[in-house]
Image (cartoon, rainbow, N blue to C red; front, top):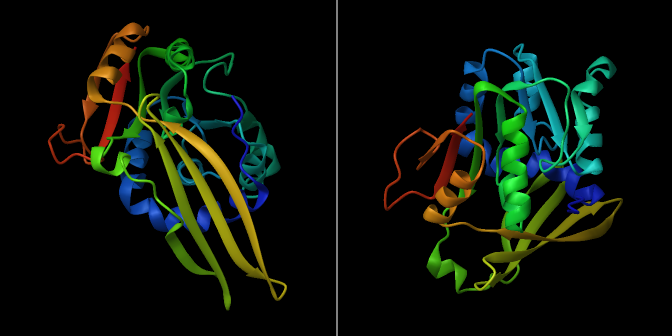
Length: 250
């Protein structure tokens, strides 16, 4: 499974997602981290959007990611004696010689697992690394059937200055594949630098899930029980929910 972020995508990641995501999911995941009594693992740790705050508040937290460029950004925020807390590993086959009370895979990490074999392998690998009664929490978006029928064509979803007088613009294009339940996404970045307009593209693919598919998937795994929430405030699923938040227990 290859999922390497381009260097400039990693460079601007914090600026973009602190604006687009922090008000959506940060409080929920930070609360879950605060509730954990022992070690915590964040899969898809990226540049440390949750990790840094948790570490600063005393959490015994570790992080893995499969993107070297993202981890390199995170390393710049850490003391060298904390670099051992972050490693280049995949959720499907990561390995530690200790276990965790809580493992999280926030912000669509699980949606990058396209094949069901990888999905089951990831769930069981996570389960093996949890203490008894430990929890695994991951999220995926609830598919909007109307949106799945429409290709987005160079839609701007972020525009701001990354430095005074220097603008950054991100646009996205999408190509849904209804048969395989995937969405191809092209991210296009443009920014001002050294009096030039620079750009970078990155293509990725996400796998989307429906409710009972998720239930069957988790029930096939080694987890003892699970619950699916409908939002980041912990409410039940409703017709208006936009996210599945899956809480699995060993």
